[in-house]
Length: 135
Image (cartoon, rainbow, N blue to C red):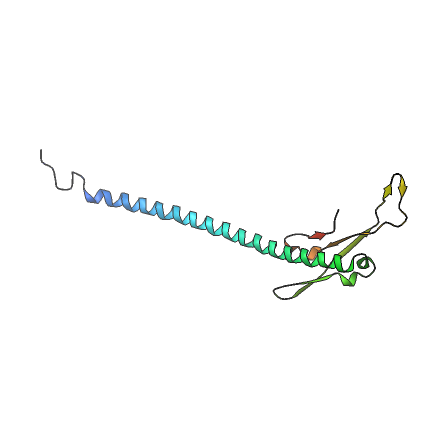
């Protein structure tokens, strides 16, 4: 029995198999790459919302500490400014007077609870409504 030097297989038959396998490998790597790009873009958007919310919460807490119940009578004080374009947001102020009693005796003038929240129009900037001061 005589054998040819290529081990009995013809090179013409192998070339097509290698090309198909290479093509399948490239397609799979492309799908993995697109998946990684999609995940990265989602993380980036989430990070942007988180940063904006953090800055807003910090400024809203500062307003509550600085003005407190004054925000109920003068809501023009409830304004925050956020980067990058010094965008101004007028906050919604919600005031409520809770009913407080100690051993069955109601307090005459309990302190107001003040809640600051971003307007619904700003949901695209923050990824939702941000509230501070809520019980």
